Image 1 (tube, rainbow, N blue to C red):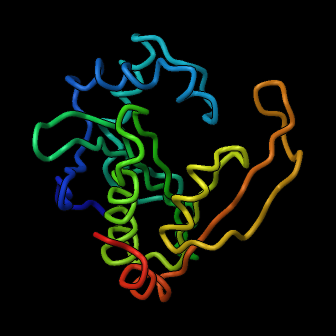
Image 2: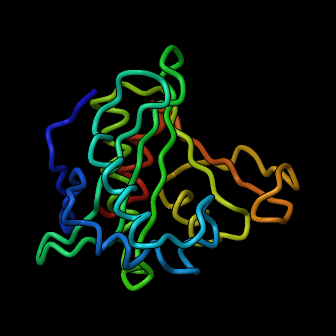
Image 3: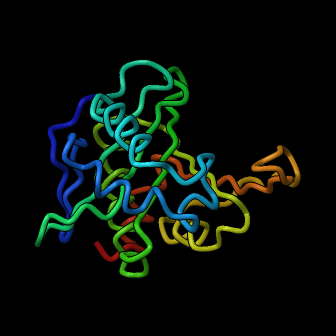
Amino acid sequence: MQPDYPLETARLRLRPFTRGDVDAVYDYRRRDDVALYLFDVPLSREECALAVQQRIGQIALVEEEDKIVLGVELMDDGTLIGEVSLILRNLAARQAEIGWIFHPDHQGRGYATEAAIALLDLAFKDGGMHRVMARCDARNIASAKLMERLGMRREAHFREHALFKGEWDEEFIYAILEREWPEKRRAHLPF
């Protein structure tokens, strides 16, 4: 699956990354509060440049573990406010994982929900996925609430299952099935 880009919503444009995005990505990926629940530590500008370079080519799903990673920008002024990802986890079972990272200055306005809806539409309508899952640190209440707003159900709460940044990690796993998505989207989502 290689979509026609950009994907557009009422307020957002989801598009492939470009080299010109390094400073905007660095603006949020350098922050401790953003890295808190990510596998990465805060990134240097050089690390962000490498990450952006890698993301430039992540625009299609062909084989397992392929990723689509898109920059999320505001439609009205082109400000890059975060990123979303869709990872093909199991080709035969048509299963994918969705994720997001947003600049804290732009949180609380529904942008992550709006972008995630566009990505779920892509996964189910264009990608033919059967199931899409998402995960978050159990302490990341905002991310868990976003998954619930999307109509995803919590399927697991892994307790002290891995060491994460020197501490025992607790993780929530959420998922939604393709047959559930149209109804959940209509019933619970504003976009």
